[in-house]
Amino acid sequence: MAKQISIITFTGRLGNLIGYRRNGKHFLRSMPSYVRQTAATRRAAQRFGMASKKGALIRSAFSGRLDAGCDSGHINRLTSALIPATGNNIRSITGFRFNRHTGTDRFLIHAPRLSHDGILYISPQALPACKGINSLEIKVIAARIHFATHQVVGTESAVLIVKTGEDFKGAACNVDVPGKGTLIVVLQVRGIQDHAPSCHTKYFAADIIAAEPPQPLPEILHKQTCPEFPRLKQLSEKIPAAASVPLLLPVIQRE
Image (cartoon, rainbow, N blue to C red):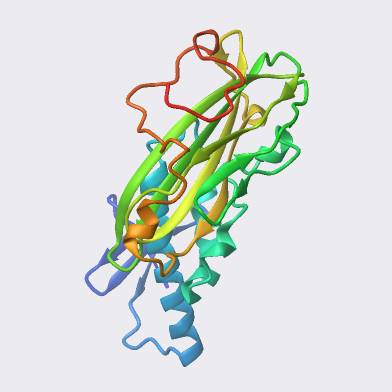
């Protein structure tokens, strides 16, 4: 270990030297000529690399659709949750929270249920009263991701706004985004205060509620599933004020 005493200091790699900072002082060390890895460490590195790539794909699919900031540690948390998925256990990320401070279970006592035919059902239930919150914005975001080709095949979303402190009649929507790959569904809930979304983290939740690997079904059957439910439509603008959106729709619809 050597101390940097020049006027210009640096961190990072420079040739075969590595500059780093410790306790406010800059030091140098040489790069090792040989890094010894066991079979276990190589496998661990491969799993971490695969999880990082999957996490980047998921973030790119949902980052433009989520309407509030995620917590600062969500990237590392998502990567950790995806490490078991390197063995094709993609369902391990179900329940992941983009905002670790609040989950959708704070607002919906009964969790949504995804059927085998691609319909997401939100059961009728009493919505809890939240201080200063007049209504809830419920947003469903579905993405089809093909991890083998590293592509986001398609992403669609729909929104419903309901009043708090009242009985919610339930809703359903088709989240079966067409194409090949894994279907990932995120449920976002925001508190609305005086026709504007609350900025407090305790009134914003965005959870992965379903992660379904591709099903070995014929394409023609895939297209004919549940025609009575409208497919999610892509939103082209920000969600309007709560007063301008119909309340208590039986089926989540496009604005």
